[in-house]
Length: 441
Image (cartoon, rainbow, N blue to C red; front, side, top):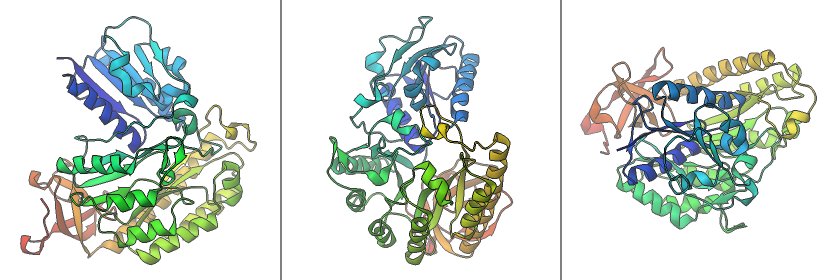
């Protein structure tokens, strides 16, 4: 039995697709093993959002060859779609698969014997218009369920439309069916993923439905206790979606809303489809209906044209905004994007300094958000393995909690009183006695 190992770079969508490809192998009798377990085949699912992701792909190939020098190495994903020949030149790589080909891997590759020269199977991204469903199972307690792929937006810094093609979606019926099958496997939480899930509803090259209709249908999948929305653009996060989540019994009070910049001039240069005033309105509406809601924010610093004054404008904007945490990215030049033609380049040192400032702000924001939840009794889904004698899990509003380790807690929901902040940034909790605890096994 041949052993196959996977390594995933990038987003939740990539994790869902890696897991789907992994099931193709196990269904054909291959043994899925850990990366270090001397596999015969390595499959690396790549990301291309930043230069660091590209470089990490190369490092992983080197690491794989150290573990198993004769292993067959396959590279797929966004980086593979964008730069197939560059990847094919990496020593040890045997096959490169594009966005369309990765799901046909076992049909394309006739044998996993090394041939000495990499084979490249990459279609033109303009020809990639079919949706292939995917979800993660067995890798984590939560499942990432892909509902949408591709993007029709063309932000000036982003290569995703070039790597994944046009926006396209699965049908509501198919997604609901998958959610029910996931529930049958004992999963308690599904995270909806995609490239631009707020744009959900384009099927067979025309808009047939929308994201609100999807979540209304998923609300009826009664065996899933929690649905979480992974990330949604502020201009697509409508009042109706916010209101639906506020009254939902399954969709949790947690939004991750990309901002990218708090300065309107930079937002224009980025070709974002909103100004910061809209973002303020969205946050205010969420907090009015769900004061305990967790709001995460993506921010890019050091974008061309971002002067110190404009950066400080973003900093002050975020400092005053009622948000819970930040994901901060120093701007990274990407080939074939409009941004690399812009003037006002910011040095790498300055990008890193600004990123550090915002990450410190993020820590303060998260600490304050956690402090607002102390003393409350909330339902925690435990999902982490033994970490220094503790087990960890999340509340519905994304507070990470730890309690003394008990293997019986994995993949169960318990009422937990939030006691105090720990030095590692987590919240220490007390599981409530069974007669007070609505345990859901």
